Image (cartoon, rainbow, N blue to C red; front, side):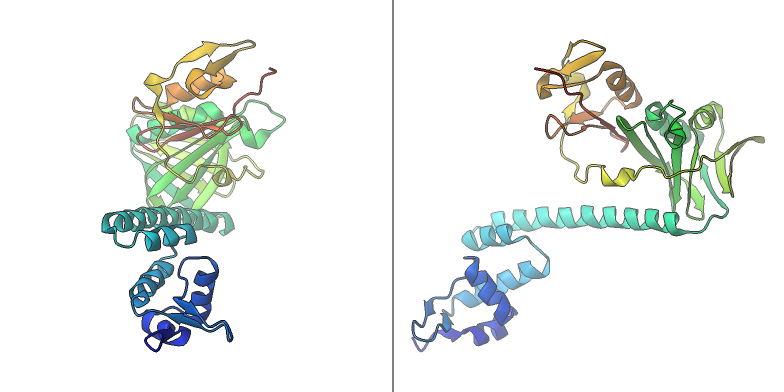
Length: 311
């Protein structure tokens, strides 16, 4: 018993705090070798120093508790441990990119109205518009949805459109001056596809302009709060099924059933989304009431809400 370590000694030698050691004991991750029945003092074996040190390291990289437990249970399986850590680091990297994107977007939301511009190559602009404009609404009762949200951030221009039943988002490289956003009329945005040279889109007050090869087109921005699209975008890049492998069955009232996922959607909406996607697009679905996610290989994303049908 004299060879056992006190909880304080293990804390000093492993890098875990005493409270953390007590927590991992309660959770069954790192239980003491002996607990004094009269005092409740925990005692640890010398061999547990290595395990505790590993746990401390995993704790510092914010590995979830369930995965820390899996590592401890398989601590001699180095390949498994490396895989667990590598997958976690990938998630952290994805999360950091999402956070940076959201922070840049927030900066644009909070910034006072002012001048800003984004210059985009002709081919990139056409792809941007093709990827999103189909999802804009046509109901004049919701004017802000009849527009396309344009968001300029360092190095990229993003476009977003939604009619509440579907949503499309894409971004392309751009030479950006200032962080800005506006909602431009969808018809005006769609017309920019006709421009055959690099285009500079600029925002000044309530006026958005597009200048290309000496031609200028302008429109008045649409006032209103555009939906918080980022809140409903999928945060993972789960693998999907290639669109070319999807089979469908016609249903009533303009609906179509996607056989592989046992879900029903508006046929016209599905066709528009697939036509807007590139040839390498995939479709993913988490459940019968979650949006279908259609991803293009160039990063464009479309969401399509399923339609509930009576049994």
